[in-house]
Image (cartoon, rainbow, N blue to C red; front, top):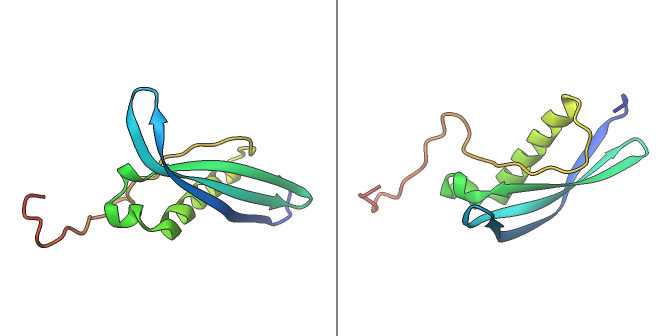
Length: 106
């Protein structure tokens, strides 16, 4: 991509349980991310799975969508050309999940 600024936005998100070929359905979100770079426009679908994130992060759609866009931006900066993408969002490095005080068994 050329030196024109890259504009990126979340256009839509679909929360669902997605079929898996090798096991049970997994909860997650399909994000439709729009990219505009000069006169070029692209739409990229990015899937994030919420079952691999801490519960409080999985419920935070702003966190999940921003993480998907940061990952997509890293791919674009490494030379990836937008066509199709599915990613998995997990906990940030060194993240400690907040446990409810009443759940002694966790």
